[in-house]
Image 1 (tube, rainbow, N blue to C red):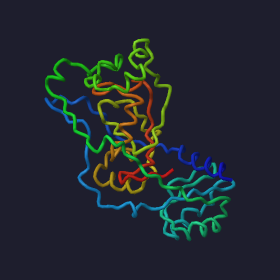
Image 2: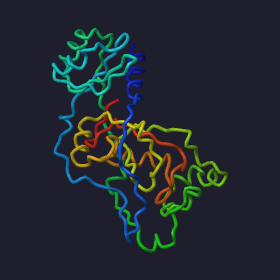
Image 3: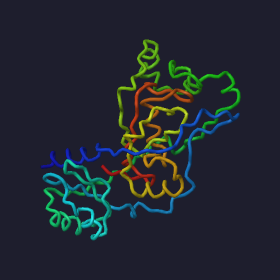
Image 4: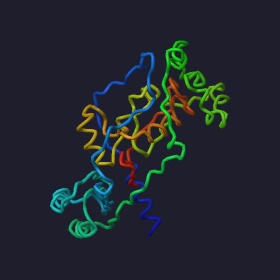
Length: 268
């Protein structure tokens, strides 16, 4: 049963909804000094306020009144897939099994929250600025075909450790036909390094608290946009246009699947 429930949870996380947005990707900035990274001023929410999520499994489709029954118990349906898998947010430990009986579900499971562990090095992280001298050579602006030309590639010991330059020289830059889903805090798809690499039509957010925050402060952005930074960092390691930093590839398609909140917790 443990293997079955774990598999069901992973299936639920990989189901994505199509979303359309009008955001356009920005061109590389042209100012004399550009700070790498973003910061949020504050978030007036605590992790205890993040609603619980439950995986609901049916034999066939969910009943027609499923969403009404969830709402009556104070919850919200965040996913209702036709194969018979749903994700419900906001139900407590008592209401979840009650809902299961009301809708004749075959399985009800709370989706556990995971702590997002920050690397120890981040405690002494210093912002990096791109100076006029660094940008003056034009390096990094058109380096997708040669990621080693990224402005800050000299600092990327990780790419050198995996012999990435040899792979790039051999033409192994990834393919847009290959998609890598990043299950994390989302992706900042407007970052110059990620311009055009994120497939927003297949990207999705499973974090309702982040959705509310993004809708209020960044209404034109896709819900899967990164309000933290962790997911964006992971994404650029996989694929990057190599403007500032190189990724292992520069042509792979990325899909943003937000399962971790700006508050630091993850649901999986």
